Length: 184
Image (cartoon, rainbow, N blue to C red):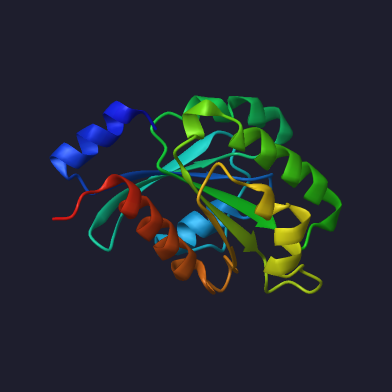
């Protein structure tokens, strides 16, 4: 986020945040967005572009962008980086075969200049699935301790049950608010 954007938000004291949900295909991004918005999650198909939801939460207006994660769509992710306050990186904790690809894509994102100021929330999704790696195991595989460029945190969640989803989003909002909003 640019310096002028920070100044603008401080001056206007707007309570609006732009949140970008990214991750590999089938990680659960759309399910998380729908669950957080209180929508039914029984019929979800792969996102072939993007979904946008504007959600009011804790006095903030959250513009949440859910972008498809298929390999053919990842090169388009950069089109959504501008003015991003928070990045939610969704990991399929039960998909051990693609964790290296997951780590690689996250690494590329964290090098993007337009995401430099964004807070990073890693959601280790599908904790309700048999054989899912724990948040600590995901933490180690993704080498999150190596991240020095962004504020970050990891939460083990289940998009299906909603478990710990709110806690993760609340952490994200608190971190963003500390950085970009002045005290009232």
